[in-house]
Image (cartoon, rainbow, N blue to C red; front, side):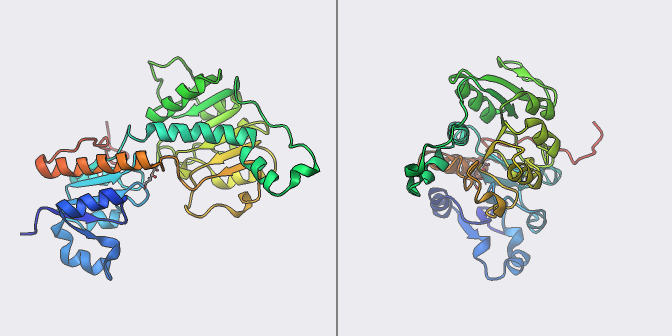
Length: 323
Ligand code: 8YV
């Protein structure tokens, strides 16, 4: 019978997670196999656990090629790259790494928001180019006291809101259902929230439920004096509509850490000083990535010990399942 402790590493992992998995388990890097498909045909039944990241996930095809898979351990809080309904139907548990990255992602969202409203990155380039000798830098927008709309008020959305309270901002949010224990007003649509706020911060999860939530209509409602901050997933925003709104000055600016087709960024954005472009780094600090790797490993360790996960994601019924 296949060795039950074999672990499939779907792709590259955070270094200390990679080291610990190799130290404690018979692990195999799928992406290092010369013929991954042939390898899975021969050995797919060896693996009851797979370790992956939010960026890669476990595809439907890979899940189907692992007939004895019982757990997917995910490095990252987002799990939109794995079909949870398919995993649920197969009795496969999935874990993620919540909480340990909340502060860093919220810090990044606030930093990006300040940066793009005050145009600090563009001002830095202005000085480095020697343009300061040509005259003063254009006026920017005040962050303190501005109106902040937050899409998604989970752990990260709440942490962003708490930080922005300190700037004397007015805060409202939109989620599918009202969140009880917060001092902010709920707005019943993304479009209405965008019409009200100066800055729309995207802090939702990714996946089918939020795809295209920031539509052309939402961007139009946000308007020529509005800013968009996205530290969630590129899929939440209608990216072509965003690019068009920015290029045609129907939005004041955007701070983007995530994109529809990473690492490819729409070329039209590359020359816009009103846009802050970041390479998906909201959680990318030494401390947080170590903590994420440790939590991912502890999920794997616990599953191997007793078949349970420390931080399982909610099971999902296949879409259209009668309640
Ligand atoms: C990670 C993220 O950088 O946690 C997530 O969902 O998007 C980031 O924190 C990335 O997913 C790691 O692969």
